Amino acid sequence: MPPMNTCAAMSRRQDDLSGRVARNSQLLRTRVDLALKRQNQLVLVQMNQRARMQLRLQETVEGLSVVAITYYGSQLVHYLTEGVRKFWPVISPGLATAFSIPVIAVAVALSLCQMRRRLAATMTEDMP
Figure 1 (cartoon, rainbow, N blue to C red):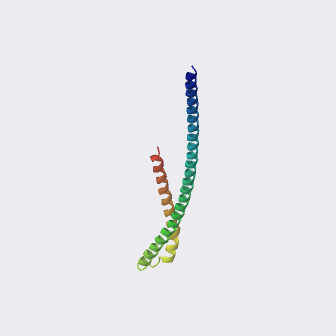
Figure 2: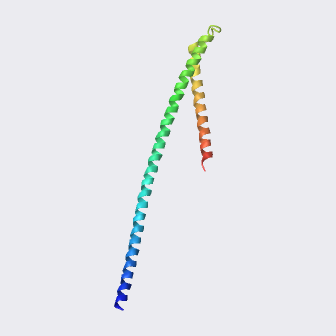
Figure 3: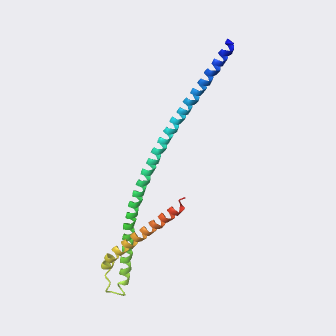
């Protein structure tokens, strides 16, 4: 009977040890999962910040492109009025250029806003 009691005691000890190892393993797995979730959350926050910075940079570039397109458009108007001046001397190239600048700027800005709306609409349609 004593050898059987020893075997039973050893079996209980092994079962207890196995249970403790399983609990410690589960605890360690939980800690690793929490660390990974924190890490993923930090990565998502950083990605969100980068996306915001990228959007601001894009809006700045779009504003500069409005200025550049307006400049080149007004120069085209100036050259056109210079050419038409021979046939129609009443037109002043400087005055025509000055009047064309706000018209071109508003037209370019509105078309840019329209393109942005269309892009946002297609982006929302593509989302599940």
